[in-house]
Image (spheres, protein in one colour):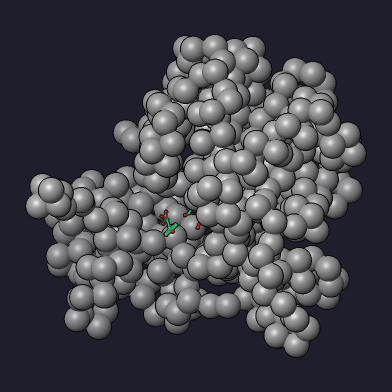
Length: 408
Ligand code: PLP
Ligand code: TYF
């Protein structure tokens, strides 16, 4: 009886945008969703993407289905981009050469997370998946719906607005052997606080010692250091461990939503690093068997854009430049906001350590609600602000509002 269906609460992040749209204050600011806006507060299409679409419009001659896991060209482009780093990662290159990386095109990052979660539920012994506290809220929903059991590991020290590194290590150390562990590759969502290279080394040692299965989520590749090849240190370390036989396998979920601005095109990938080429054959066949009854095959427009950009050196370089501009603007407004914040009542130094699309302010739920009610500034109640909503026209208004709310 459908009269019994309770109304579900709105998504916490997307609900913010809905409330923002309804607000008639001309000074309103949307700091909710993690999607890029330019200095005028408008969404953009990367110029390189627009050019690639122009080429496609001319040359595309069919709209046939792609394969269940996409086409081989897309898979190989992604593998080379992420694991070989265009000849900069010898270990990744070795794994590719030995046919030990199975790559599938997926419905963006969320789709790849869901597919790997379903796969692990079917073929991996442990159902426990450790995720950082806090993490992207959808992680918990995706893993739970796929039959896994998410539990938190310590990650962030809310009191001091910093990484809770000692407790992070302790909680990974006390995880049951063989569990799955979710790692954010860079630009941790929501905190923007990442591990240093040395910290990753220590944590990976615990992970290999405890035989944990690393599942890496890389949604913001390029947003930490402005260049996708610089943001991939964790992947290189994992490849090294696999080649050294210290780690058997791991999986990576990746998305072009943010770093190509292809949000709504739903284009991403999953890669599973396997123990042998024989395993790869079996795993690839099972991925196909798993995906076929869900959505049959992924959409083609996004993969064609990616393939076009990677097949043309000019376009490829202009994409890297587009990405650099996007990340440059975010860093610039982050810095401007930091300069304008009143440090006499509140230590804002964490802003300078956080990277990516977000700042995790440490403001309380009450303070966030006050910003919304009194200033029409919209952010999620955990105090995460999407920096892309900030620009030269509203940074003064925003800084002033935050300073007032902290004083009161
Ligand atoms: N993972 C994280 C941590 C994210 O923040 C996001 C998007 O915000 C995603 C995955 C997936 O995004 P999409 O499905 O749009 O690629
Ligand atoms: O802002 C965030 O963290 C994301 C953004 O299908 C988002 O939740 C919005 C819609 C979507 C995927 C990610």
